[in-house]
Amino acid sequence: MKKFIQILCLLTPFLYSPFLFSEARDDCLVREGGIVNYSENDGSDPTKYGNCSIQPDIQRIKFYKLALCTSEPTAPTAVSAVNLSSCTTIWENTSGSSMDILKDTAQKLDGAVTIPVGTFSHFYFEIDPVIGTQAQRNFATPRKGSIAGGGTGTTCWSVALDTPYYEYRDRSITPIIRAANCGSASEANPGVSNHFVNEIDGGYFESFTYEGSRNLDIYLVKDNLMIPNFTPVVDSRNDITKIIGWSPQNITISNDSAKIQLFYNNSKGSEIGFDNEAGNEYVSSFGSGPFDMFITISQ
Image 1 (cartoon, rainbow, N blue to C red):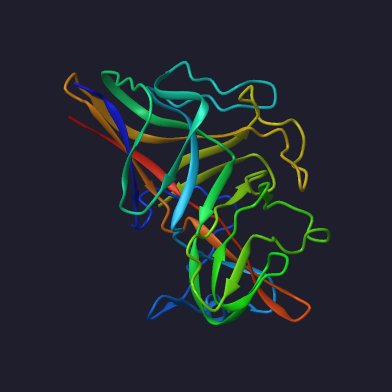
Image 2 (tube, rainbow, N blue to C red):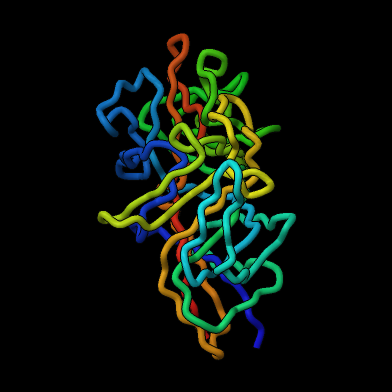
């Protein structure tokens, strides 16, 4: 029997605490007809920069490794790599395998899959720190696109970039991310904007909880699977090459198990960036936001 990994994107409340690249944002307030009205989202001044969350139309993720562990991995430090001695790799691609994840669409992750028999306590993953987002939304009032020569209108969309942008950046040098455009009509082919995750909450690690229990640990690591030994620097890759993480999940696999389903939830997976400059109200970006993952086993 052929064994494979199937990835499904959901639009559901988070089953586990979401993986956050930055501070959690409120959902975008959406009126009838799918119109976003940012000024009513969270009481913030719409003339200043801010964000609210939506589900992206497409989220592009590059996967490197998936594993199941019989005990929790030992966390990486600046002098020691993550210890995966209790883990069995179920899928791996050292060059990375990119996938465009769409809502309610099942896709297979290419490559050989190993499904080990046994009981496992943790799910481990490695993905690329560059996250791609494609989105398009209508707004209650006209906005200006942040790219050079950007248009103005009530419809705005993501724009493909030559290089990924950093969320952790020097706002005195780059006050506005130039990754969106706007107009009076929909864009037939919005681009995928790439965002490099170069820090988490001022560092390289975060542990997230759900209902008071720890359930997702995230690390930004170098090629050697150690965290950088210096404080994150703005507008820099900070030697980061992967995002690794694990969560406690009770998984039992028998000889009859043939399919692993990886459920990927990004109902808040994109943060719309709003900025004001020289009297213009911009949509600056459709950046990456929180997501979570969990797996199931079936025959």
